[in-house]
Image (tube, rainbow, N blue to C red; front, top):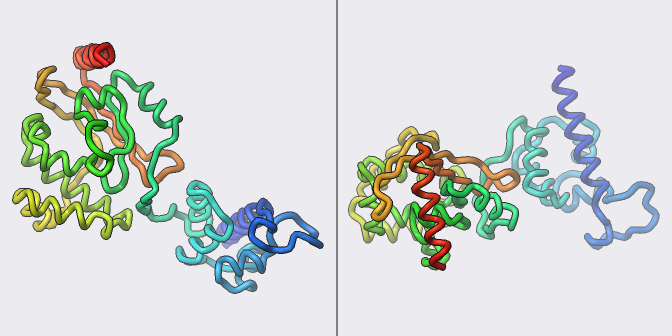
Length: 281
């Protein structure tokens, strides 16, 4: 009981702290005659469309466990960042919020520098619907020239089913494709992006009978995001690498994929190809 009370008190303290950081004038509330900085409790409740009494109880550590919907309303009312919203959910429900797809994707210069620093290891960042939004030179050498495609065409699932080079590079394309279709289905559903992926799914069902069969089968296969892969590169020959997927801190809508060369020779081969490509630009 004391532990549960402590969790409610930590939630209340966090809400009070975030509320105190907001400027009333920026929300159209009068700034005069305020004993403490920030918004008043009733103003946050008004913005969140919840009962002022209940919000007061939450801040006092006696409001019980709010629902995910209420926490989302409070997060919007307090103008929380993605990371702050995640912390709010951990305090309020004991878990982070479900990952949601965001349309306004993009990466910061810092993230791009992280990708570039990984050379000669190929690395890229993709969204929950597998649109590639950033990559390094090694990924261009090993996988494909993402810059040559328009932004809407840089989708990993589309590459797998419509680019003959991707098919030829796989030692067992059929098995790889089945696992990827399953993983894509699960990740898009988890991100709440069913509407966003429908045009892509319909496009691929129309142009690829194999995709149509795999998608309609509805398989959900085990896939942990890691493993060893062998590619047959048209210029570099066979390359082995260990692939891993990582969440991007503060951006739960993005995933960092790293294709680490499995051997020192593989790393030297990719590194030399990156250098040649740089000299040719």
